[in-house]
Amino acid sequence: MALARLELRKALAGWGLSELEDSAVLIVSELLSNAGLHARVTPEQIIETRYFRSTGGLRIEVHDGSPVRPQPRTPDPEATDGRGLLLVDALADEWGVADRAGPGKMIWAALSVPRASADGGPGRG
Image (cartoon, rainbow, N blue to C red; front, top):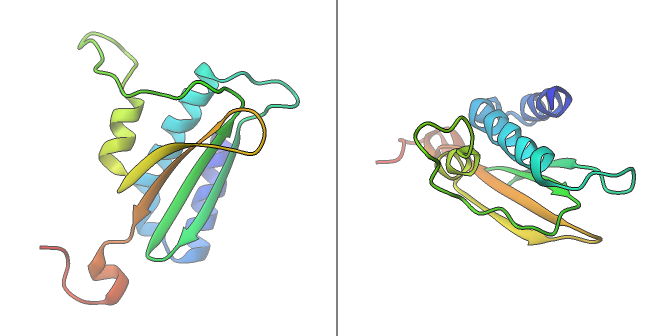
């Protein structure tokens, strides 16, 4: 997971999107944690991360070999887990789950650069 976060930080810096770093790193950490807990990982079915610069932002993808689609849930207040997708939902502009080539699924999240940064004009309001 540390390598995925490092690669994401380097990509964001290279693309001039460092302002998305805190949210993006937390999102990739949560998605990778979920994949690690719930996905079948074999030498043929690894967990893979991909990052894409998009118009005005970033797309993060985590691919895994499990066909089971994640569902946000309301965790017990005393639970130490179960909040990952709630965090992703709060931080990402949008996110979802899609089929992929081969077994398993892809979970993706999109982040946008705030308008004031993207066009030099006033921020959202």
